[in-house]
Image (tube, rainbow, N blue to C red; front, side, top):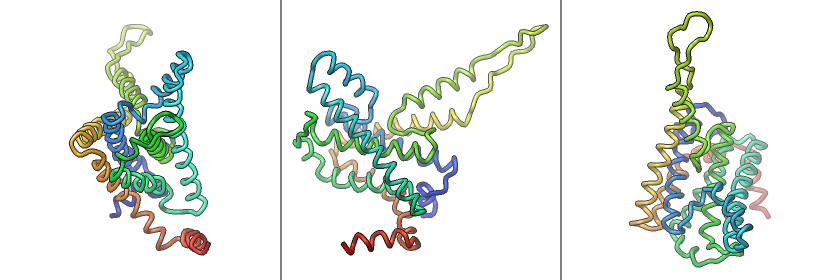
Amino acid sequence: MRRLRHLTNRHRAQSTNVALGWVLAFNAGAVNAGGYLVLQMYTSHMTGFASQLADGLVLDNLKMLLNALGAILSFMVGAAVCAILVNWGRERRLYSVYALPLMLEALMLLPFGLMGAATLSWQTPFAVPLTVLLLSFMMGLQNAVGSKTSGGSIRTTHMTGNITDLGMELGKLLWWQRRRRGTPAPLQPVPHHRGRMRIAAGLIGMFVLGSIAGALGFKFIGFFCVVPLAACLLAISLPPFLRDAQHSEELRGFFRKRGGR
């Protein structure tokens, strides 16, 4: 329980950020790959949606434009909600400041896993089913958590930056430079950052493993396969929240005010 509590508490360490990032990368891979089987689109792939937005404008394809716009706005709103929850928690000096957005994601995933198929028939003004907007919102929420906890160095819903980092560090590892002054000196390795390689490789590996799990889960179980993902998020976010519920006068006062209304 103590280890789980430290994953999302207010006080951060690099090892904690990495461990949380790997958990969230697995979760993002599962949701993203599983969502593709249902929707034929990757709901965390904002680069693709940005290009789709431009294509829709150029091709005068209103449906394509609205699809991309809906996903982008949902992802952005999710990130904004994360920032609001984190700052709300910071103002009240909560121990669970980073657990709050993950609790929200978990509470959204639970009913989504139980009745997510119904959302495929709920159309929206963006010409896509509600499923797309919900998944994009949750990916934006989660990606912002990883960014907030690590100061922007760990992103969990897309792997472009991580693959770039891994490629650069591998390039440094393989490159040998020669001193040009005087007699040629022995070749020396260009300094590379093994820790950054480990983090990037771990995030990529966990995302791929999550993608495999999500694809298999959606293929054989359907939407219900996201329920274990929600349980995992609750397992790492509930312990610090329960600690606050016991010890934080600010949090208890907030709920008393809301309950009295």
